[in-house]
Image 1 (tube, rainbow, N blue to C red):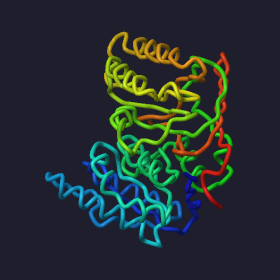
Image 2 (image 1 turned 120 degrees about the horizontal axis):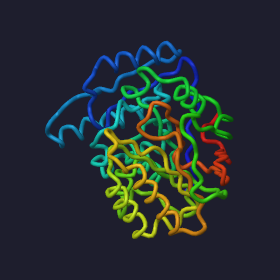
Image 3 (image 1 turned 180 degrees about the vertical axis):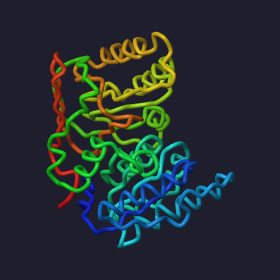
Length: 315
């Protein structure tokens, strides 16, 4: 399947806000995010049911699907930003109108639970989406690094040729080397739950990037073993471990997670493996284009490069 590349976002264009996962418990952050986007020169359109709460999943899903389809079909909307993650987007995958979405390729931005939506869209349509900041979790008050990466990725066709890690996140070369392939990944818990469904993209020569939050080492181990037992890790050209943050951090937990990463790196002798990517539930957040073809390289000393081999955004 040929990739669908959305058009670059330009000042004055309209950004649509949707909430396909959980609602935001702090509406003030939504207002702050809208003000931030408008201050940066964009118009903002709210979906019909933005941040609605309904305890009936059937009602909630109908509203979320309506909003997704509304934004993709609206010719004035040039990019779609998710409000936050949480839970719920996986329930939508069987009911999405992939034909409609493929006919109207646009920027979609979000991470965490939005992993399910991004991976399904890529598997079914080839649409490159952007695993990065969301309106009510980062964009209401983004850090300079998060801001620079996000807007660079969405507005400049040349930006993705070389992207850098934040200085606070040292790269560790678990297995040095280089690899080329399509960036597939996101939140480990969400991705592992998609195994065996038609919504998970192919893993051949994949650069697999992963993150998670508040998951103990034994659960990270269980999910990675699921990926391994399904034959997916063996197909990857690289494993890129982001930030696996936890609050509070139990004594010895960081070392246990490190040992798990080391172990799974041995199951694919040909893969390049690193940890420390500036990606996860963190303030200094990299934006990663899901489905784009990239090259990654890491040396034993931790010297690291990551860059696109083809456009991720159209001029």
